[in-house]
Each structure stands twice: as C-alpha cells, then as structure tokens.
Image 1 (cartoon, rainbow, N blue to C red):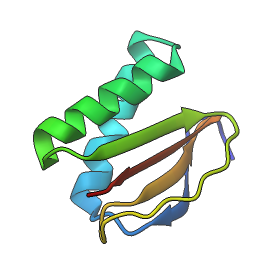
Image 2 (image 1 turned 90 degrees about the vertical axis):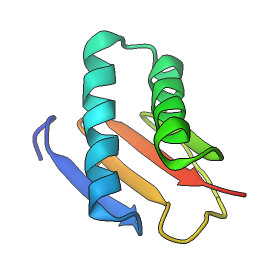
Image 3 (image 1 turned 90 degrees about the horizontal axis):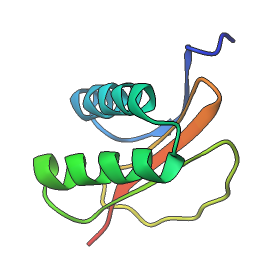
Image 4 (image 1 turned 135 degrees about the horizontal axis):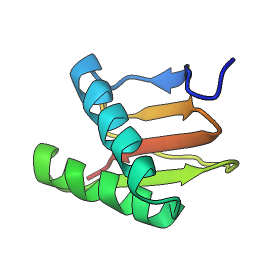
Length: 89
C-alpha cells in the first residue's frame, strides 16, 4: 500500500464526517509535522462543527480502548500515521 493511500481499520462514523476528518487531517499534515498540533486541530475543528466532547490521537503506533458515542468512532491509517477520533459524553 502506498504512503498516500488510506486503509480502513474500524469506523462507525458517517461518510460525510469521515470525509471532513480526512480533509482536515491532510491539510494539517501539510502545515506541520507536530503530531500534537495535528490532533489538537482535528479536535478543535470537530468540537466546533459537531459539538464538544471530541478526542483525537495521531501517531505511528499506539494502543487504545475507548467508549464512544454511537456513530462517532474513526480509526484509520493514512500514509504512515494512524488516527483515532471519537466523541464521548
């Protein structure tokens, strides 16, 4: 799989939200290589667009166990990075 290809890992997020998240992510990695800044930008964008309570992890390797509101979980590899986003109460 090429570095710019996406790999679906586990999502219950609606397609329009996934597309928005992927766009924000790709724009962010063009602006900075600081993974914390990328995660913060995604979280803030989703808090503003889809109400507060969003969480975001970006990295090359990590483990997680989350409880998410239904239809808000996104976990995917985009290029060399994994991204996990979810909303909780």
